[in-house]
Length: 137
Image 1 (cartoon, helix red, strand yellow):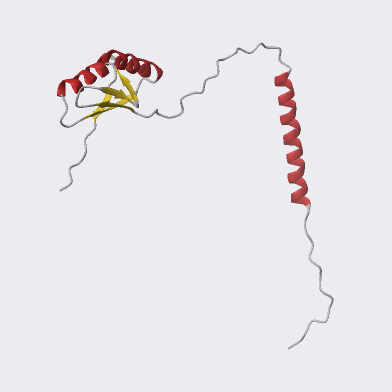
Image 2 (cartoon, rainbow, N blue to C red; image 1 turned 135 degrees about the vertical axis):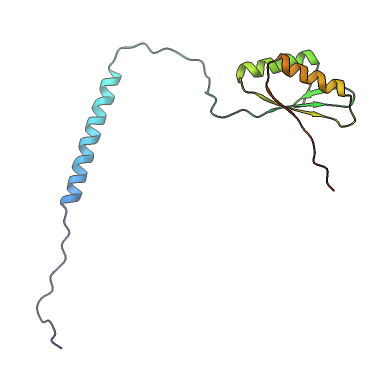
């Protein structure tokens, strides 16, 4: 088997593609900086806005608890039926598709739950549901 006795050739790196990419990046940043300067030179009075964030996702459903004695809680606040209706109208104004979950006690007065349903209807809330628990067998 013959052995090579000649001198080994050293590997070389082709720098041309890397130089091309660097020049393209330089041109890109030069043009981008120029556009940013021109935009800042426009003499326009921009309008002012109140501090507010856009609604990015649906708000949580409002949870209304109706106790056996007819007491109504929205979250952790005890409200009268009129106050509840005002809160529901305000929530509907903030988000048109506001949902409400009504949790009534199983042994409670049905009239109190119906009053809350009427308050939802008067506030024009269309997405409401009655919470139940699945019976374990």
